[in-house]
Image 1 (tube, rainbow, N blue to C red):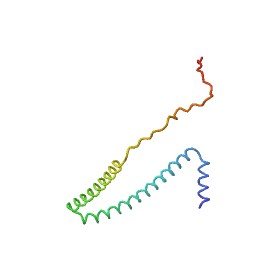
Image 2: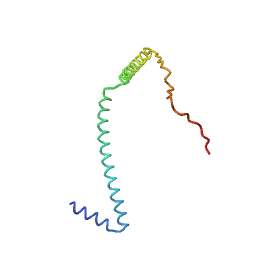
Image 3: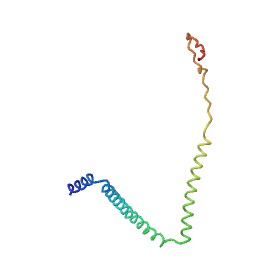
Image 4: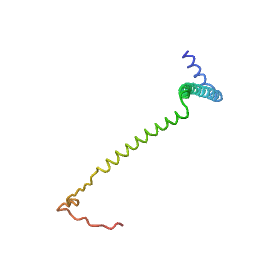
Length: 122
């Protein structure tokens, strides 16, 4: 099987430009079609599993249960945000200001160096 495929590609390499272009379009199109079919198959598997979960949820849900679930989710998220804000404020208020004073060693001058005299550029 592999030698047949190798011979097929050797024949294409030795053929004219029109034949090479035709096989290029045919093989590229078939490759894209295979990838597209695999992608659609994967999407169908994913969507079917999502639809099964939605059917189970729709059987047990009504307007009031959806409203109740929404309230529960909002209260959990708002409680979490309030807790984060309280921790941030606690850390912010517990900070203390500090001042560091350093000595006057910023301008270090070496004794015995020659002064550099400015020169005019041409």
